Image (cartoon, rainbow, N blue to C red):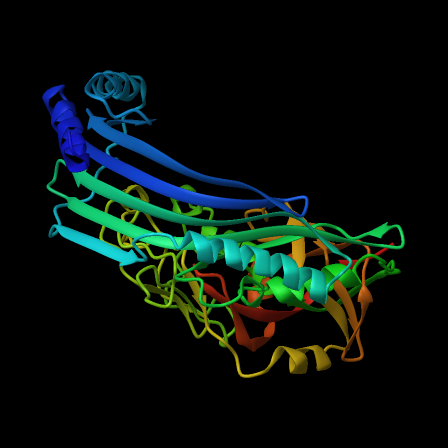
Length: 430
């Protein structure tokens, strides 16, 4: 069977076996991967993978299963298994599948990898790192090309095909000088092409430089409440937690801090957040949501005002609110008017938070964690890299207390995020 025929066969088998509603997602991928470890390029491989996801609803009970074998016998067994899973689950009339939509095919990105260019760019990254930052050690790097084709079908008539291809680069590194070793750091990026040197993408050059500066850290004495400038990589993790208050878990339980606040001011007026999965600016685009809807770009917060919740079809059915056709995983945070250097000059006493290690914030937004690879700021100047200090505060209030947003934004290939300055968070040293 051809790829689409496999998905069609699985869907038909589910319905003929007694499913009332069913969904099938067949994904085939090809990955060409080049690795550098311990300063040596030691692996080039190509892998092919298939995955079939089945979802079934019967008697308001749901079953989900994924398999990586797509022969007829494996599919037939998976159909039996997923129906048994549904039989064992609790009924809930909020379970559903996406409605009929116009059939469509989506395709973007490069069709095949340039393996020579992948090798050249990885060697170049290795050489440039040694040249610019001789104390920095590349612990591991990987450049890959990934091409996936997905068929999304359901019993309501949904019929989507999505094909996409992009390059990805990741590097982990640390620095060593005079017996002192920095904390490890890392970055990653998705790319449409390999036209630029890898060291000039995302935040690699900045983070590599900082790694060399962080072999000797200074302790921070005492505790203070001040300004924290959150870098794009760190802000991305905070943003995920913040947006979770708009999603299924908190909204269904009724415990969301943003309950009944659509149209209300929930953040500083300088903050606007969209999720734009179909944007041509991205290397990693999405045209179909995980729920089986054709994806639509979405303005979540506009000038600090909440435009929408982020409910799945299930969440919308449970809350009697509107679902969104967006997985909220392609963030575009609006840029500000001030350069990062000017933001730093405005800080009397604070922190440049480059990496945050901590658990998820509580239901009311309280959080606490360790600032890693970060810098102490005083009188408008970066003073020194700090030994691990604690940062605590409230995420919800923090987004209201934004004082500046940088004009620069990090381009990760899956979003655009600036540096964000927040007042009122507590920094605790020894």
